[in-house]
Length: 320
Image (cartoon, rainbow, N blue to C red; front, side):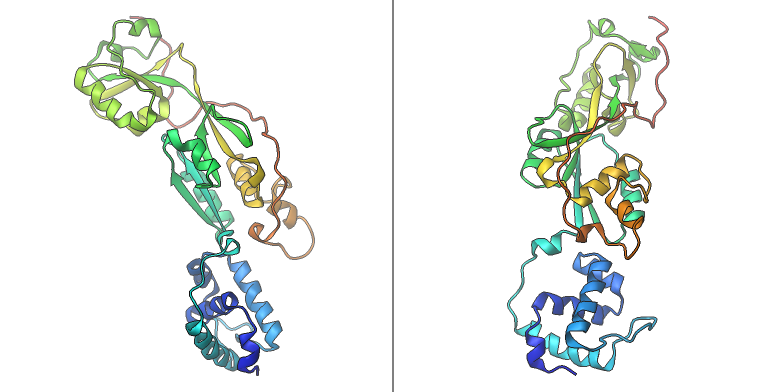
């Protein structure tokens, strides 16, 4: 059994992690509480056991049980932690998460579900980002990646175009335009058009359309996001589509970033184009992507452009 002197030579962070497992008696719950992956926590405990030359937990016990030596180490570790100054979160502790921003109108639930199934020990933080702040959020490290609406300044950025979004005109339900399935801008020449350039204020724009019997042209997803019973929307045939992309700073292309790109692009878990897939196809123990070194930045990849799914696409114009 080790003495307190040997225990004092171990850094406080590893002792905190051991105590978290010892108190929870559950590696996954302790890892979630610490904000790190289970693999990383298990590896730290194994290293600690090797360094102390003892078993801190009963091998193979279900549920997890402290060994006799583990109980003694727990008491000593608690005393050392209590005497130590508060420890700030380090970059190493923060690595087991990925912060992904998204601008209004972008739906991320599908990718969130896939990530949770594929990487349950790595926290995915989904952060709403106003469209006017989409680029600054990336450049100031407020997020690691962001679903943005193009264009953005491409200097130092990697971006993968995902889909194009059709424009629609929003009008009151009893407006004459509601009789058509699609219109052109010439059909809107006499309408009271509301300025809808600021998509962050789309809810207020819809209020104005309803209040003054006007009209506003917005991306399809924005019309759906702010749908009201007293408004309808119709396809506009001659206004440029908007494009949604996934962007991130090129010099911060980590393996977690590459893994999320793989999720968004529909790659399988064992795809050789994803870091975890490459590791899984090699003999030996698989590592968590958060534990491996960042990969070099890649140039933006071209992607096939497809229409956004979800709502039924308006049919052809039948004329006024």
